[in-house]
Length: 339
Ligand code: NAD
Ligand code: DAU
Image (cartoon, rainbow, N blue to C red; front, side):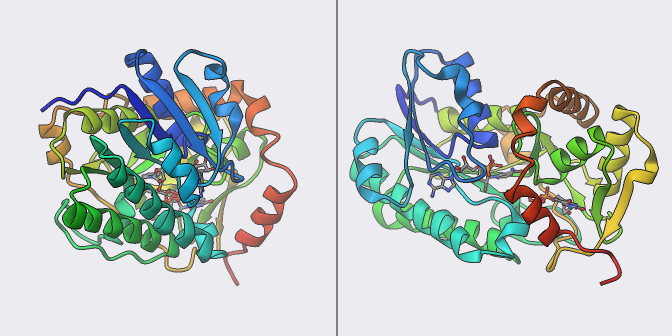
């Protein structure tokens, strides 16, 4: 199976993974036209896409995936939609769940409806391993049921359910990727890796929830983007794919590795009050995406080293983000372990 797509609408590409995906497609498929639709929330940043401004076959549209008129207009001009647009931070979903329900569920529905109306070749929904919920033992397979436990993961699961319903009921040519924890350049400094890296650079405390024992599968963002591109072009319609490395790393191990690379002392580690409803383990079975011909190319050691160097060399990118509202959020989110 191979699909030729000439014009893509990439929603949410001013964020972390979406901007890396646009970079990947521009490099590997320079003849593909890309329209980006992004609301530019606190997590969206035009600086992530600056190198493409004014280049042939690229355009940026500032707008909301919940705006059906705008989405329909853009959908009428492309062959396929790739949807990254979402509220994405679990901790923020505990403070404002409705923003997540609006974008991650309703926004996905608006995009599905437009893709169906214009008879697109493919609709790729970038989903997450969090839809499976906490996995105490074994590994999640694509046919496992959803047991989301946070407003974020429940909203992502809701968006996925809508997309599957559009596939079943209206023949939407759906493709789904369920990625694990991404890290790398251009990640907003609220997720674990960039919080630890930027705090370490500044000699600040590295906050770990509870005892730092929660396990994640950390995947370098370029590996994830290659997988999305592969599924978009090579997977049969209806395909759902877990995307991860299959390796398990605790938060404490991430913090220790960051301190090692930055040469900062272990005393910077600070255990803080736990995230409510914290999922302590996700683990993916990646045999399906492996059979499609994908494997991760960047080890955690190599990816983290690259990431630390990127943040060291791009302080003009992240320093403006760590100001004002950011510190309001930070104060609200992090509490001492004893409370
Ligand atoms: P991010 O928070 O960095 O970026 C999200 C982008 O979506 C931002 O540019 C934001 O402005 C945009 N956006 C938000 N609401 C919008 C709306 N209503 N209309 C248009 N644009 C809107 O997120 P990310 O980490 O790059 O994640 C991208 C996608 O990948 C999300 O769907 C997320 O659920 C999924 N995902 C993320 C990870 C991860 O580890 N970060 C892992 C698996 C899946
Ligand atoms: O698994 C994929 C998901 O990964 C994506 O769908 C989400 O969009 C993305 O935000 C991410 O969710 P997590 O909650 O796993 O990522 P986060 O970086 O917030 O946290 C990773 C782990 O580290 C988790 O066990 C909580 C812990 N943590 C997080 C932060 C921000 C800390 O101990 N301290 C922190 O400061």
